[in-house]
Image (tube, rainbow, N blue to C red; front, side, top):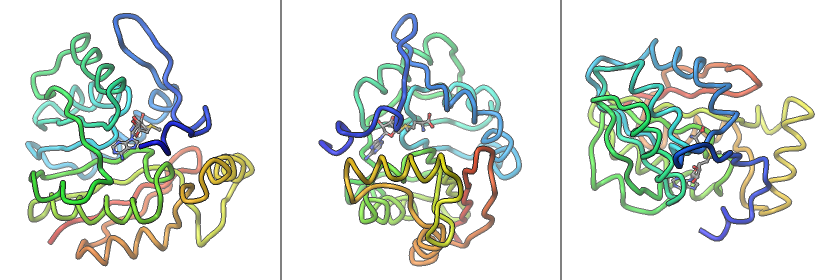
Length: 217
Ligand SMILES: C[S@@+](CC[C@H](N)C(=O)[O-])C[C@H]1O[C@@H](n2cnc3c(N)ncnc32)[C@H](O)[C@@H]1O
């Protein structure tokens, strides 16, 4: 994981708070919009695997908002896992599991678990194209029949950034590592189809982000 250590500061901001909790301004900004998206699609009692759960703010917010959905937060990074645990201690929810370590770009994890839904927020632009394809392949494998995949973040539209802020953020990522940066919306749709998922919807989200929702047959 050396790549993640050299990301620009703006790529994964987490501000230390009290009692081990980290706070990400972006998570606070997008939690309601992503929650509304989930509310429109998530079936009661569906098990949710959250990949790259970060600080844990989304995990506690969504576990609280969707109390029938067992929520399983994961991340690759020990500091983020500790923060998720601290948020869970601070705001307990009976349906929120303790965090587990998962490298979503490692081959094979999709055959080790099964879930009814997967949420990935703001990760694809921080990994390479081949890592993103590995993630999609394993997510598709891990989903139970009828399961839903939610991908949220900044993306290229037909190969282009669509704002000055996006152009400069994408450039700052590729300057650190030419393999990472925004993925193209058409590539994501291609990976969804390649893995035998059905594209349910592509949703324009606030701040120029996109959400892809895909279903396993
Ligand atoms: C920009 S943060 C997003 C966190 C959270 N989803 C949010 O929106 O607030 C990116 C997160 O991805 C995690 N991450 C990076 N590479 C990963 C990987 N290969 N597998 C799982 N998580 C990863 C980082 O540790 C970090 O918590």
